[in-house]
Image (cartoon, rainbow, N blue to C red; front, side):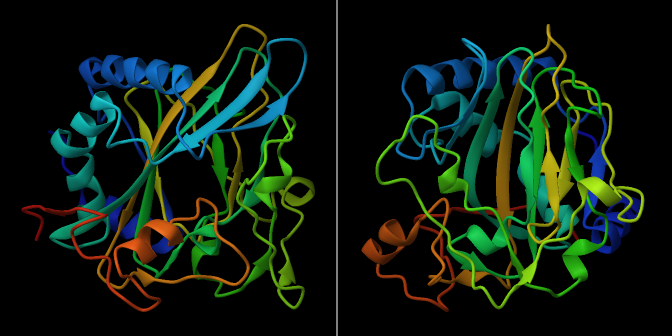
Length: 281
């Protein structure tokens, strides 16, 4: 197993994002691809189609299916991903929060709007890491992109309500309406050099780890013969607490959390969001 270096930990801390090359074997790539095919055939409650372009072109999202899809559960429990997350957070234990998949069919141009993750979540805290793992090779123009250092800006931005990305007009999708007093998110696309927008050419087995407060987006602009399949996992450190937000949450875990007796300010515990202990210093 490749271990995380001190330099990678420092880069993650300062920039909020680090590229990790060739961390996962073909065995895991094949297993997760099988899991994604199962997921598409039998979507979970959070399933959404974010975009539809020409006939047969789509962007598909789903999350929190790891308890129902064996391949996801085996990867989360048995792979080195938990060790990577704990090392980057400089801790011996992490809570697993949820999985997410992003599937774009060949030639899709839809790009994920610039946003931060944590404002949408049913938790709050700085020590988080999301790990974006493509299961096919992807050029940097089509991969997820980041604004390095933006996780430490300490600002609240009005962001995209992903519930509006709903071409199928599905009912009861999660809605997030950010406070009008929050700042407008910067125009990243028109000032990419100013914000040092960063992405990488990636192969299957590579991944990008990032703090949930970093501004990120993209992942579209595929070539006509290229698709994109991504398995994403979210991990939480010891400062993270339950936080039910008036703006709304997406994915909204509040019903599940309240059913387990959780209130805002509580620790996550080990029942809904299992704790993994590692040998990290």
